[in-house]
Length: 403
Ligand SMILES: [Zn+2]
Image (tube, rainbow, N blue to C red; front, side):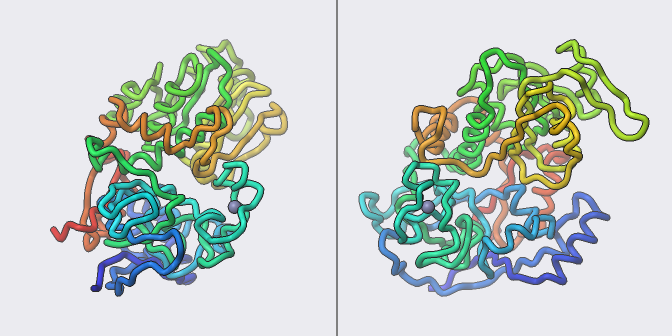
């Protein structure tokens, strides 16, 4: 049987074109330059032990996907993927085959990290400790290199009608949880990890820079899992401001007013350098960059008090690190999520996220999901790239649809 999939193929010149074009035409990142094509693939039974085939129900488009397709991702990651691959690491699907204790037909979400267990190798120290997102064997074993499903030539991904996954990646979804909420479990698990990485002291003042799906879900996780006091969310668009409040924000500000509002609320002093952007002496205790752009990260660095903590949740690009040195900021990364989360009593991020996905906030975010069939991928990617301005939180592919 042949099945449809969107395939990303290596093409450095096109990547270079992508970089040039998308820096000139913001919002139209992907349509004409993305190294993506719709292909038919022959479906074969999975031959690796512990693996099974899945039929995709919905698969989200993530900022990291758009970065890869527009040539914005650092070359650092080029050694951690294998081409051609089918993107899509935010996946709700149903099992085609029995997979150990899970019978065919079970609806599941996929933890995309391709760890030692999935690769059939002896577990590394990180995997043994449950810190699966730190796995050191993501380039070896019986799979081609790939840090996650959706970046590996052997597994397929959610932007195709079929993919394969290992039992260790699968989390069954309760029957009464709609697909639209279930597809947000993976990004919610990442948000859970970010909230725990933030190590927020009780009643601390927190800034979330960015109100796309990452910033909004991180706000939900901060409220659910930490003793954060005031949470200020930086949002550009009206629908983001409304949703941020539903997600637990104490106040929502525009990028232009964030320093002034934090200065007032914390009694900080604002410094205006002779050249360049202003910054605070004093500020929030913890800031989270939920975008990854230079301006978003610099907002987080410039609004955090000395000795405070800044979490990189979006995949970062460049930034002026002066404040990190001068204010002795603790800057920590937050990548994917772990099977046993430090700071959550060893619970898994997907377990926690599955609970949050049932709540009012995630239901409100899921209500605005935009769905596309695979063949309308150019429209889907452009919609995702401009989602904030278009009133959309998340765009997803429905590979069963032909309309
Ligand atoms: Zn490992």
